[in-house]
Length: 135
Length: 154
Image 1: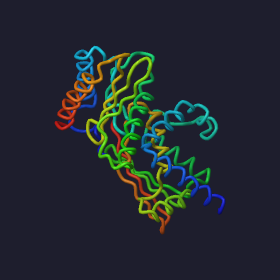
Image 2: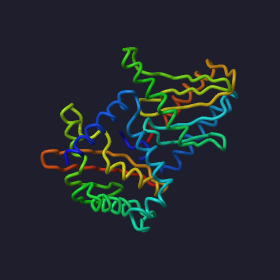
Image 3: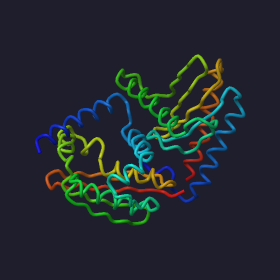
């Protein structure tokens, strides 16, 4: 796995850029309460989550959800994973693959508009890919 | 020794099943490291006589490898450090049967390398380090494993 947090620019600058993109996503879709950007091995690249949430554990579980989804699709010969949605009585968690190594997770309110949330997450994924490609 | 061989092969099956179910093993690493880092005072007292160089990543890897040697987990080791890379050569790791089993199934060695797990714990303890195992080679015939760990400091 490539050292995604390496490169010419300082890690802090890149993290700030990525965090800003996450916050922008939350501003555009008020249903989104928090978000995380991580590698498939659980390393957090950026986050914008409420206090009281264990960021590292939430990231690990987001990666895990997507990894398990990916394996299920692989085993059932249904292509590659695009997103996984976990809907509960109090809210929703949506996880999408930004690229094969990066995962974007978002925590949504109860009765979130899942379509809009997914569209906004995909737009954000594109922005993230551009930032990472520029490294 | 046969007892360890059986233990290692069972461990191999366990990790293979975990991997098959979609759990990313490096992800599992990080969670194990989180748990271990929370228990670092106990680990330091129990295995390091209270002396761990928790402020220095390279030194901490040396410390951990030394303890693994003392505990008989590995026969010997060599750590060299270059620009943001730690190279570790491990001689006769007691988990070599697991590497052999992995190789017989076309894998590069152990599903999880114990030494890189130790490095992962070290990077979790020394905050501000993000680490990758960028190379892992297991030469079962010569009882040698080589790990190259790259890390970044924020």
